[in-house]
Length: 187
Image (cartoon, one colour):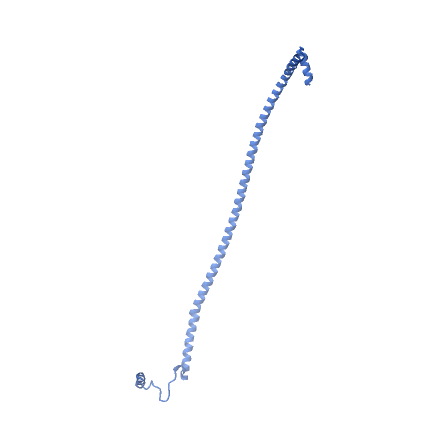
């Protein structure tokens, strides 16, 4: 109750110009039909200012942000494409150099094989020549030994035949007859 007394005193102590006439209660100013034109005027002013701010300040800033983002994305895509092309070029250069290196390695290996083959052929020819010389010398020695042996075979055969005749038959035959018989058998 004390609070009602305070409110009543405040209402009675207020000046009359602020108080509503007796019997009429004051309406909320926004719903007062007499003030609609004033409200519409300020609504139009506020909307115009807001529209002006949107068109001149906020939308261009947002457009700039979107365009910057679009440019950055396009730049990033361009950079990615450039890097992809560089990578493709580097891979192609690498593969080309690798193919050239393989060709060079193959050529070097082939050259080395041919060189080794030529060296081996030269050594083989030299060995064959040495062996041919040794074989010829050996054949010559064998021929000399054979000729000498054959030359001595007649003498040995004659001596043996003479010894056999003397031992078995106890006959003494002339050496010239034995030599002639050995020559006849030899031919």
